[in-house]
View 1 (cartoon, rainbow, N blue to C red):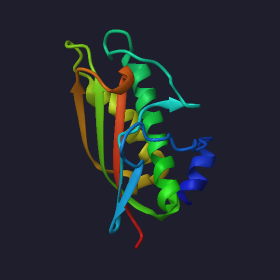
View 2 (cartoon, rainbow, N blue to C red; view 1 turned 120 degrees about the horizontal axis):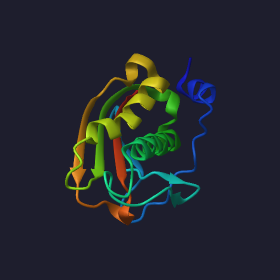
View 3 (tube, helix red, strand yellow; view 1 turned 60 degrees about the vertical axis):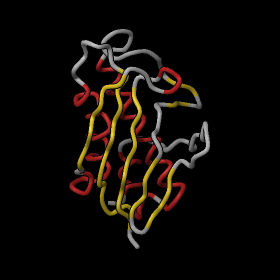
View 4 (tube, helix red, strand yellow; view 1 turned 45 degrees about the vertical axis):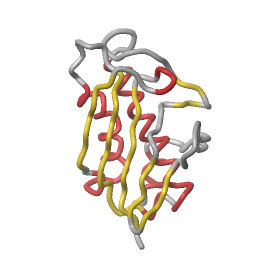
Length: 152
């Protein structure tokens, strides 16, 4: 089953790629690797929520946001090279805007990691960092970037 077929089975539609908010591109290919810029949990061009995880944002909502970030990253990859060219997810980096007492960043970024496993199966297993930060762009709670290997 292809990644696009799996997304359809999961009833996930890839959104349009968000316009960059600065001097960068949504995704860039170098050899057989595609790197995405950090993706925010935009839905229909708007953030779902703002605030710090562990204060204004629950870990469960942040998990959903990380999942949406991954969907947006997949959209950027699809627009650049076509999602079905992805052979393996290599690395996920997730940033969580966290209340100083919040230490559950890995569970939040599981939202992205688990989605990638659902879409790509064993090829979705990846190395990962889940980093707590003081603030993210537009006061979003979560930002996720991907590195994937694609067919040459």
